[in-house]
Image (cartoon, rainbow, N blue to C red; front, side, top):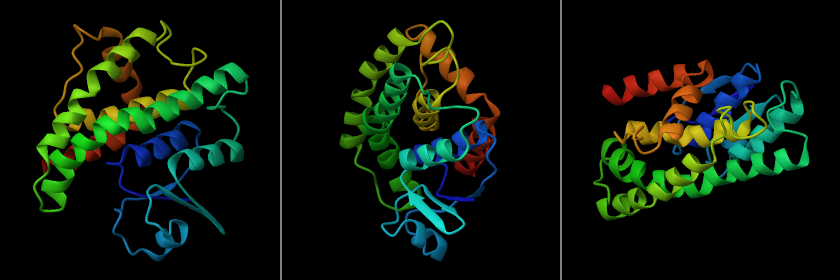
Length: 211
């Protein structure tokens, strides 16, 4: 099973971490949107990352892939069967993919991707607008993180993987979640991102960005 896409993308990072937490062995091919890798193009004709190849089956989009992996390997369950918990898990996945990434994506693209990897200056006005949208999202998370340290069902689920993933990019941007103002969120992110499913990827990304 192959997962295509750079882990600098929170969507790719989500899939790789999800697979690791489920004990699914994947080959992670780090490549970008412009790749002409024929297996990647077969899996993702519109060059959307992440993409998945599993024998004669292929798929793109992070949420589609994690639902496929969950159905393929139901244990340990990362998308709860309980209707209330499943609804909340899907909400947090969508919250991360849309609301959080609307903020983080604008910052990361214009401050890192465009100037460093595309040779073009980023638009700081767009980046600053993305940063201005971040505080309400932090406040929301600070207010709803349970004492267990997991967003749904007092155990690790897709909700935690999805929400934590874009905050790696926040860290890459040099933005620190202030523990004085958001103590629960800071502790939550530190715990989730220290898990082996994330830690190795994050270390490699930091080395890459420092080079």
